[in-house]
Image 1: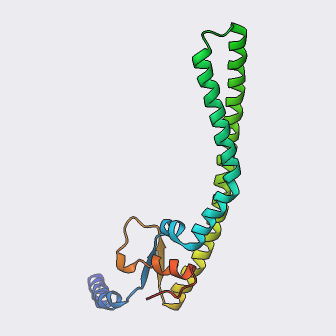
Image 2: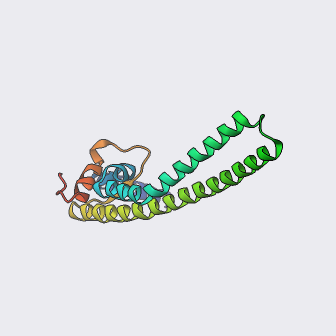
Length: 170
C-alpha cells in the first residue's frame, strides 16, 4: 500500500510540473548606482551639495596652503633660526595642523551626512517610480543591485527617464 501511495504521489507531482513550468514571472532589475549617478534629481542634489560646501572647501584649501608655506619656511630656515624661534614656529605649525585636521574631518563628516540625506530623497523618489512601473506593467518582482542581470530585464533607463518627468519607454 505504501508503494502504491508513493507511486501515486510521484505521478501527481510529475503531472503538476508542466503546469508550474508554464507559469510566467515578470522580473525586472534596476541599477541603483546608475540612478544615483545619472538621474536628474541625483545630479541636482550633487550640485546643491557642492554649492553648499564650496565656501568651506575654499577655506580648507587656504588653510592647507598656509600650512604648506609654514612647513616650507621651517624646512628652509629652520637650521639658521634661533632655537626658541624655531620651536615657536614648530609649535605654531603643530597647532595649525591639528586645527586643519579637525576642520577637514568635520568637513568630510558634514559633507557625507548631507550627501546621504540628499541621496536618500533621490532613492525614495526612485523607489516610488519603480513601484509605479511594477504595478502598471504587472512585474512580479524588481531587483535592485544584483551581481548579474540580463540587459533585457534592466529597467534602469526607464526609471531615470521617469525621474526626469519623461514617460518611460517600454
